[in-house]
Amino acid sequence: MKSALITGITGQDGSYLAELLLSKGYKVYGIRRRSSDNHYGTVAHLKDKIEFIYADMTDLPSLIKAVEIAQPDEVYNLAAQSFVQTSWEQPILTADIDALGVTNILEAIRMVKPDARYYQASTSEMFGKVQEMPQRETTPFYPRSPYAVAKVYGHWITINYRESYDLFACSGILFNHESPRRGLEFVTRKVTDGVARIKLGLMDEIRMGNLDSKRDWGFAGDYVYAMWLMLQQDAPDDYVIATGETRTVRELLETAFSYVDLDYKDHVVVDPKFFRPAEVKILLGDATKAKEKLGWKPKVSFEQMIHMMVDEDLKRVQAEIDGGLSK
Ligand code: NDP
Ligand code: GDP
Image (tube, rainbow, N blue to C red; front, side):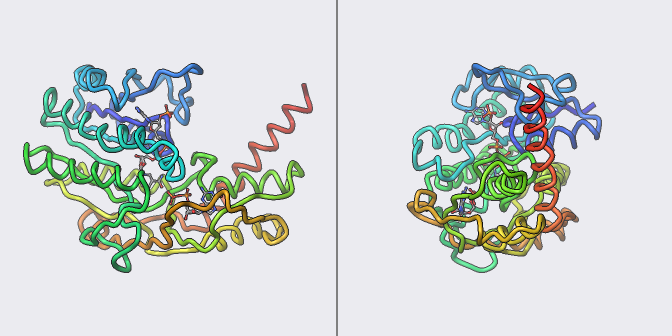
């Protein structure tokens, strides 16, 4: 039985990856942070199937212990302060987790289990002010937020450990990927949750930032499969994972609102509060390498994904209403 250690298991990707690895017969270990509500996040439904270990990306001894306990064949480093906007409010914390945290986990692997295969969650945000269209593995980085700057460090330290210590370390440069489990602060989920609340009469407007920015949005379930594929290859490498399509936030609004027969123009208010000090105007990925070498391609379309998210949010918000009424 293969063993995998996942950091960030309580987040969006952690839950889909845990489901995938469990379905493949892996023994799954997940790192959790101690918190006052002791939450399991997105993996609450799997809590009897996963072995949890308390650790933190900023605390090397706890990561060493986690690797000692799990003796993993594969380590997936998904933990991060992952919200771009927050990275301007907490730039030091973001760097501690998203940059130095990567060195911490790589050091733990190097010391305890150097033959473990390692996946680093890199991001299209590293392309930032894009230097080339579309963006591929060889496109130079131009990060535009403290988050992206920290992730560039994480990306290069992963490559450096591969080249310095011969670790099987891969970096997936994943473009935005979403799902009903996406955090409510990210634009797709903010919109689908807002659509559900407006449709069910709980609110009337959503306040948004830059509607012109463009993203290459895919489905998280498809993207975690690419992570796994990277670690099954003969040699470690870095890959762009993307759909190859880009849309504006405005198009996202149209897709979500029209699905429930509403017009976004009646409900969306642009609020400067949500504009960013430096914006990534457009991202568009070229996943040709992943297609050719991993045989990977996305299965769920943008429309299918947004409709799935609206459906799930409608169900959840309706359950909240029903729960409130029955009290
Ligand atoms: P989420 O924000 O949903 O999950 C982040 C996870 O990291 C949570 O489990 C969180 O735990 C954990 N975490 C945060 N800080 C620490 C810490 N100090 N120590 C240990 N764990 C910590 O992110 P996603 O699942 O969306 O993304 C997974 C990874 O992929 C991240 O690294 C992200 O930056 C990267 N990425 C994501 C993309 C996307 O579109 N989703 C695109 C490209 C890259 P807790 O529950 O305790 O907060
Ligand atoms: P990011 O690509 O990792 O920053 O993912 P987000 O989902 O947070 O943001 C995607 C894009 O949507 C960015 O260009 C944001 O500026 C834009 N955007 C516009 N309005 C909003 C909003 O209200 N919330 C968020 N999170 N993003 C918004």
